[in-house]
Image (tube, rainbow, N blue to C red; front, side, top):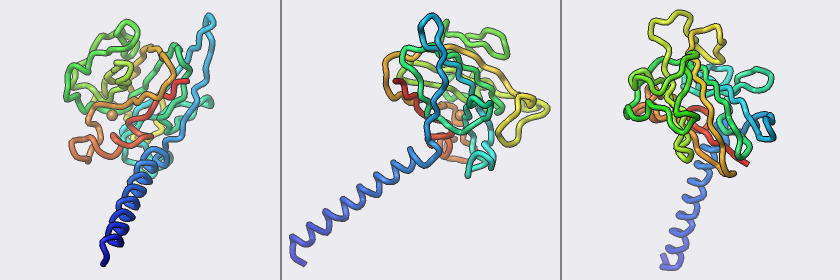
Length: 225
Ligand SMILES: [Cu+2]
């Protein structure tokens, strides 16, 4: 084979490989349930205020995902339904009041430092109505973290022996859960990653595969504009 032909074949193979990788990445970020959800905005003293209601579940269930056993975040839409969307459109310079209902048990944090809330008002949260500036790292079920905002909140888990635990999501508030509330502020417009840092993906290598690295489950984006 002539050198020129060989070179052309190699070049086409490299381009084809690149295109396939591109499709793979696009698939991860678009097809895996990453459609965005626009959170309704209210105004208080002329400033945008958003109420974010989310739940974290041990198993997302067949109703909400082709991967029913995956651990997941869900967001409540305006009709009160829990939907699997983790890309959230938020206004810039807004106050965001977050309520997380966690239905999952504890997995524990690898880094105990992450058990102290940071990047939220007063660097404190309320847990089941009581103010807290940290939790036992072993009790962490998931974290809500926005690295660009230096924001991290560890969510304590439901006790192993709790009655009425939720099997498959969507989980009703009548079932055993923890309620974690905090407030943070969006700044300039941008596309900010958020994610869980607890190795909560049971059955995956080191607990960090599958739902921990797929948009639409344990991570997403804040689209601030
Ligand atoms: Cu998690």
